Length: 313
Image 1: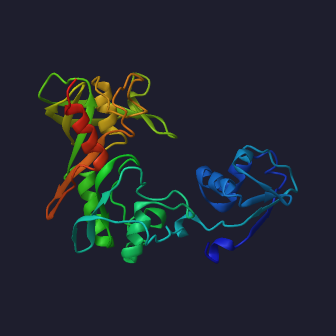
Image 2: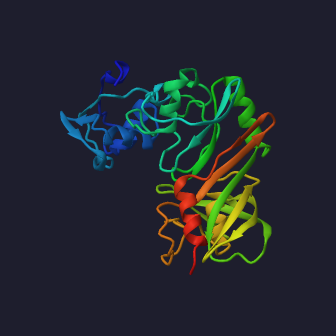
């Protein structure tokens, strides 16, 4: 933990603040979100009246005159992901101010708190410290786009601010070609197709996306996804998917809506998934934009499941 992170903050609850929830009080006084204030509680950084509190105290109603002490209250914009030289980093392509990393399944793109370890960003900062502060900065430094924790494959990161701005604009304008390989449950009848769906976030943690109904249509994002069958397997289909737009869980939610959720998808697949996949089988196999052309081979678990599903009945 850095010296800045050890700085103590002490507050006294005023009469006007009496009755406030602890997480709301911290968010207001420290100028951060409630989610960030709850992370302080989860790390044991908050004491009330000299008594350390944990995450389950977020709803504590404060009394006038109570003293709140916070350690490790560095503003979120000053947070920094810790460089992790022992974390492996495989590069698929690189150029001036950008690189494409091969993200393993199970590895988050970036940490959610300064003390978290095991992210791709930590591995990257150990080799490319110049990426710190680029783009959104802090714990998302250099990150141009994201992949789900259990999605593997090509991930684009910027190490220069000018490149981050260029590449983010390309993603916003849907000019980046993203190609995924997916193992979907069941036999998909058509050889190819395109579907347009209004998707909405139904739950944030853990994230869950649904097709918007009449009540949520005004909050929905209209998404477009193209797909084609690559190979018909035993009880499943290998599909190449090209999302035209970009939205949380777009590929997973779209295939589930079509009646063919991903093998191993605990959020969208039915309980009858017989593949024994250890994670949802989605792999970002290619990423292209102007001079960028990166390709990621199937990871071992994806290839192993393909082999098993090609076997005899």
